[in-house]
Image 1 (cartoon, helix red, strand yellow):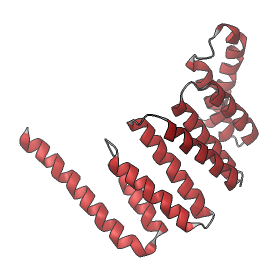
Image 2 (cartoon, one colour; image 1 turned 90 degrees about the horizontal axis):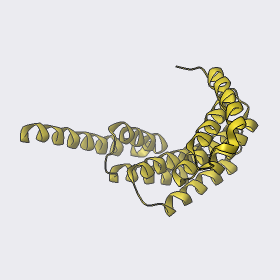
Image 3 (tube, helix red, strand yellow; image 1 turned 120 degrees about the horizontal axis):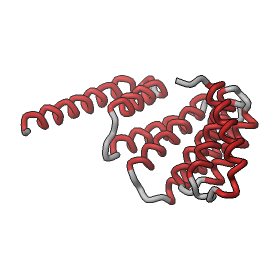
Amino acid sequence: MLSVKQIHYFAKEALDVYTEFEPMIPRTHPIGKVMYNSLALGYYGIVDYNSALKYYNEAFNLSGTSTIQMIVLINMAIIHFDRGDAETALNYLHDARELSAKMNSSVTDYNILTRINFQISRIYKLENNLEKAIFFAEENLQLQLNTVSPTLADIVNSYVWIADLCPDKIEMCYEKLAIFCSNIYCRLILKFVII
């Protein structure tokens, strides 16, 4: 596993090579956005937020798909939140939600949307706006329950998060979680019995 400093070093080296050959590389080639995203991640890791944002902007501008743009917007939101700017972070996350609304639905899109909703809920919780935190947490859970292939870990985390936000709903959350888990267990047993 590479350390943050190693990621930063290799990303800078990649940038030097990319810059040299940039005129020959089509703007739509994925290497640019991957390289800028990696460099931004390296700068984020060494807490150079200005440089991280600069390279995330480059990755965003080179992104040919809304999916990549949504991921970059989430990463930029996290940086702004880490800097103490919750309002800008929320703006980036809501921009990512708007991009998601314009896209055709797929499993990946829903996974990214659940990530967006969780980050929005987390920010609202830390900003002491529990009503909005709960709204986005519950919306997040509904998205996960309605996806084609929900993961047990994500469902468990969502129920635990809602229970954390709403101490008066702890018992209900854990009851629903137990029912969900028992349904999964029953489906697995039926699969093996039918086969």
